[in-house]
Length: 534
Image (cartoon, rainbow, N blue to C red; front, side, top):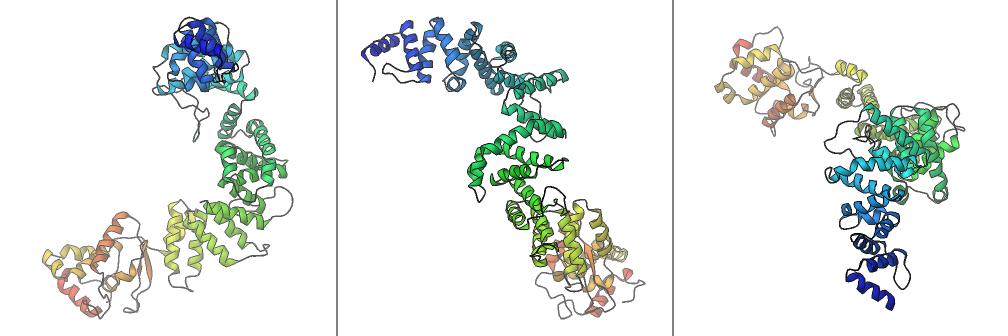
């Protein structure tokens, strides 16, 4: 509760007396005498006193009002003048807050404080040269027109100002110089920026120099929490943050390639990130326990034998989080002869799961497996083409080579092209099924018996056309034709709609093969002669 003396000061301050406003601001600034400490209220009264040229007021603002309070004011830009005056009077901290106000606001409104930017940079240089780490980091972020960018994630945390041009080489050098000084002074963000830059340049010694101390500090900080966890924690994920999780995983990856691997440290980094619910860490930890890489190849890293039970646990979590590599790695584990729970059924299930999620090697292996077992199940050749097409689309030359051997590409049949040219509009209207079959042969290179006898309701498998007329034409062979383009798919779908709910067999409206052949020769006699024996 305010005392009588305080009430008098409050009345005088409200009446506009500068001395009273200054006194009231000081009381709210430090608290006591019945008034609570309130930096925002203190700023209000000190600013009013400063507007009446009370120099002590702006000195107090510059030395005691932090950036967060200034940014929460109704007009943060109006406060810059007081921080500027305090800095001119020797308050170094005031210059840092002034720079933060100007540069942070400039990002959203480049023209708002354009006149102050040059002075702010000089202010930062003065503070940075005086050894203030925050100033060094802020100067690193704004030493050039645009903060240096890295692929995927910015090297510096602030976005580039609109309308600015890429930084020149001297400006980039200045950025790196101040970033290094801020990092050496212990600014975590600066250390992370240099580690990020070294990672992208594949400079592993520099990366470890900058990142390893941070990773070790995180590991020590959370060692007690980690010992209490049994499952990944969203709370730990929020506490660590995306950058720290990535840092831990990357440190572990680089350490694994070094000549002297500290297995305990690698595992500790991966476990902390994995319990922080980072799916890349869960995959890496699973592979670490399995002592293999993502292709299933054995790695001689660390000490001791593989622990497949722990590996399966973490790889399953990573797979459920959407990583195809995890399911593929699981399939490799269940295939291993030394694994006590080796199971080919589980292996195939995990392999297909990885293939469905787009894993190229898994798709190739599924295609090869289906092709090898095509005699056990007739439809396996169709499955083989499906998976090989998927793998070939991702650049697998082995898949493309095998696919060319087991499935034909769509090529026009010469006899069908001649027949299609002979068809008149009246004939197409009179014989819609015949016209559709001739068009199908034109598209996919069917022989005349294949075109006339093909049951399109069974032949269309989506990704390929199964041509199998052996039940009605014994001299034929089963073959597959790939559907490779959107035009082929659209044309086949259009033709297939014509045959929906139609019996394409000999008891259907088209009759048996001899009836169909007679209809064809009658409709297009010019195309009827051919060397093929019908």
